[in-house]
Length: 104
Image 1 (cartoon, rainbow, N blue to C red):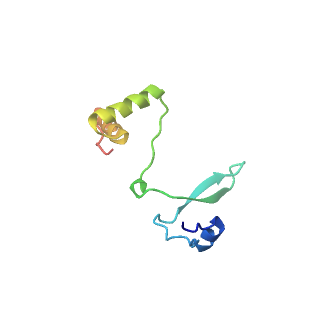
Image 2: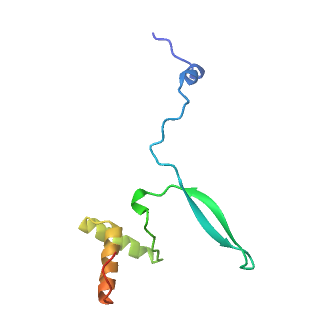
Image 3: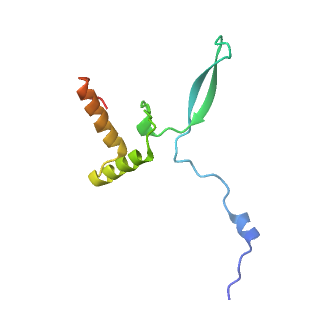
């Protein structure tokens, strides 16, 4: 029969040094906040990690009935497209309707 190691002994041999992070360090963001009397503008720094694919992009958000979300997801599954691909196509169709360049 082999001798079992106690949890305390196992913890002493555990390497506690942190491994090198594979994720890039957080990108600091600055938010402007107006004072109560709109006289001064203060900045607050916060940190967050932003996906490289989102750098230089801006989110466009709308609130819809949950059935709209479900139908979009189902259409994406049926066509093997992401919801973002479907929304990009829809926005470009809207731009075309109003004779604007397709940039989405």
